[in-house]
Length: 517
Image 1 (cartoon, rainbow, N blue to C red):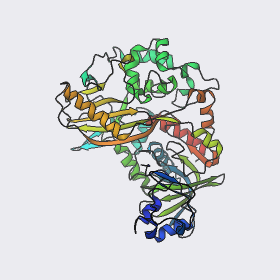
Image 2 (image 1 turned 180 degrees about the vertical axis):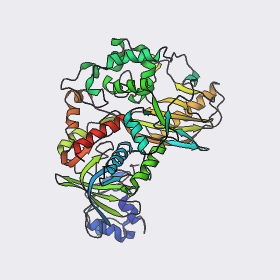
Image 3 (image 1 turned 90 degrees about the vertical axis):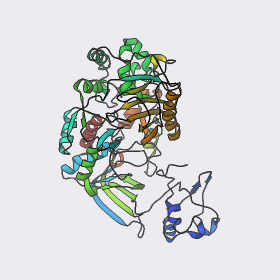
Image 4 (image 1 turned 30 degrees about the horizontal axis):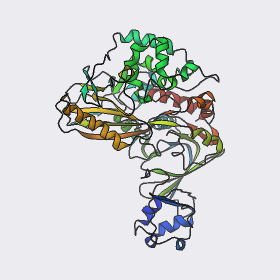
């Protein structure tokens, strides 16, 4: 089934659905869209219909409009209900990916504080990015972003939002190592004897890659071969085996970490991450969601919630965007500049007027599917985290798809879970991987499992954006960064920088300087 938020959104079927699902029952609103050139072709889930005539009498009455494949929205009288003109910045904090908003929210708050006019388009009814906070009897359980680097950027932002914070400390030091494939305990030495010494050794090795020292991809024309070699080979070369448990904690999003290119592992745990770990993390006392609740109060009506982008037109003189809101109104937004904070995949950018230069870059992405949630009623031991290990693999690190941890977060009966798979790994498969693994622990007699269920769940897709080694050597990131400012469009977010909030905010500050806003 097509993603209801991609360009196959059943816009016209929902309009028609008010009076029926076939052409004979189509509404006047549908006719307006047809006459405006909105509907150019239609797709059922099981077939593609090419070049459907726009005259309704040429379409069989039995044909249902279950999904619209192409939306070409013209801002004409009777279609656009409201216009917003002369915004200095239009930020897309979300379009098709699961949850967005960390960098878009940050940019919006910063610019509003500077007296700039901002519009933020958000597909959800809340801001948040990769956050996820479940409140159990008033106690926050973070299952997405759990901590922030303790830097001036972070503390200044939290203070601006009046968010109270404290040092991030582990809820437990009791880790139980289990092979989720069998449900049995497995031998694993995951303890780092001297964390400080290990970090200093690791830092001494990775610090030579200056172009990624701030989490960005400022690579030289001659990309070092070491950044493109499998990370396992890099570890062997520099005798970093003792650091693997620590690296895995932060870089499990790379998937099969030992075979992943070193570049992408270091973007998840490299120089800036080591520095942050040595300095310590902080957390919002009331959960990470509190950060975005407070930011939403600051931004107010500058955020257009529950909205869907229909068309984006850009030029050297500015940008124009048509948005559909939750009440089926169509708003046209004109802005001087556009900041895109979602992941710029071709699917996400479908409503954009991409040119060949942009399309040739964005079509190269590869990514991981990442799911997060909270398990309850499991019977797992209290005040203990369950770590997935695979004794049949090198360093006992599981291969995709895998459950990373079942993390005890300080609230009895609840464990946060993170799951990593390739881009074909589905949500239902991820849920079964979690619950099936827990049930196997019960069957094996490892823990007295009861009736595990998911208390909450979210998708972080796409994540860990990457391209082939050949593309990296060919100057992909040079070409990607060269798109900043092209057609008055600028970019920030996890595809341009390491996916850690503080690093993303620092990168966003630099982009805002480039924008001159």
